[in-house]
Length: 341
Image 1 (cartoon, rainbow, N blue to C red):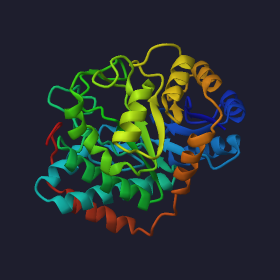
Image 2: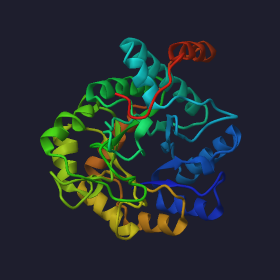
Image 3: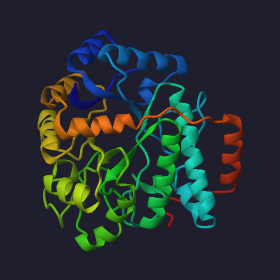
Image 4: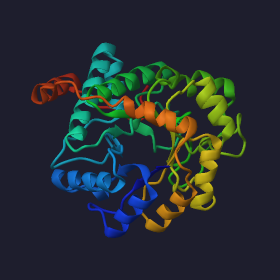
């Protein structure tokens, strides 16, 4: 198999896509709203993908809650944004951690029913007042200790439900004054401040099985390359200072923050130390370019991938109705605001 994760164009696997995934052998699939109609149709798409690659390949989705959830009504519930847990934390720390864990456990229940076994959450980004709102109320707060605690509880809930978490966006997207979907953010903060705030939020989460990079330049460490394509940041910050040990994937390699062809971006991310490249938009010409540039999965990357997948466990027993009622009680009266501490 090759070291990339692929998106698809719609709710069913086209003949061209079926041949592509069979030949290219991507490590996994990531789903978006364009792929989602009904539970049965989505389960069929996932089954078709796994049949085409010939294995129980990981299937990913962004289901944070709030603005970022690909599954929603009428078939799936709405979940609160990260800031809701942060607002609860300020008045009831233990209640907030219980709520974050239970909310994630309920999300995992939704995902597992479909065959989705990886959620691109939690985020440990620590936003600042002058940052672009792309993170905003997705964040759990503006204090690194608080963010780490809630993110850890959320990750625990996912794993208890048989779903692997993806920690994002290493080593931090909270200070970015631009949306990396469109522009390359440049952070000029001194490293000492980054170590005690942005990076500090990720350290307690360093043993999580999967992580995703930020397309953000940190000039104090690498004045040119964003974290995704910076060997210095991957080695000296993500792996060393933060101590992250899991499989490291890039954020979407087609985002506007990056420059160069898709093949050049793919090679640069892998050369920098990313184990895996993520390509999301389902455009076949781009998918072929990424696949051609992505290496066969081997060495430390293959070992980390195997360790991550071995962490997939059967979900613990859950009384879904009772759990949802308890979650509603825990979150009652919470009205989060973006960027709350």
